[in-house]
Length: 218
Image (cartoon, rainbow, N blue to C red; front, top):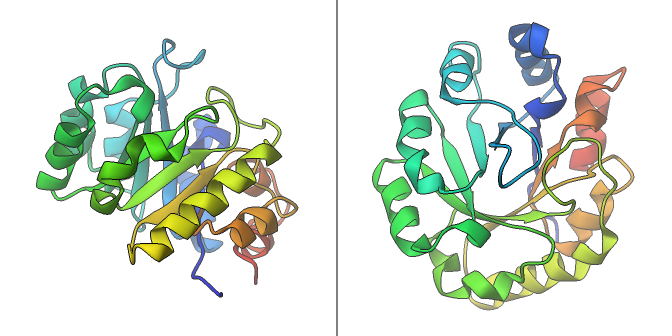
């Protein structure tokens, strides 16, 4: 079955000294959305971006921004990212106690809500709320750093979730983040993913447009 595939270049791999130029270039190359990784040095062994940079990005970006909160206690920061201009927000199931409540809070602000799952977390753990979600983000690396190798053992997890979504007539998208390249993209597309996050493979490519088209499958 042919599905529309969205490519979301990850700003984690962009040149931080040239953010404005990098954003304009990758959008011109065909990016559908921008993926904005937030790390706090606790949930992940790394620190990245906060709300002020997101707010500044909104002045340059002409496509939606997908905020991935890889942080402890995201409920304490969700409102700040909403105010800064997030169009989509994903929170990790591993750190949210009242997940249903937080998803409703995000939705109530007019932002598309999603849940992210680390490699070890089964999608079945969030089954009751999947119908509420814009997308489920399946990590195909352990979060924390860009440029990691794709974990191929996640392919059956993607396929299983796709089967569940289709059998239940849901519109929930499947986003995949980690090690996505022109070589691994066909594997996740075939498994059923519809949103592909790619950092190094896009921003470090000699031809961004060609890289994006290859990941999209066209």
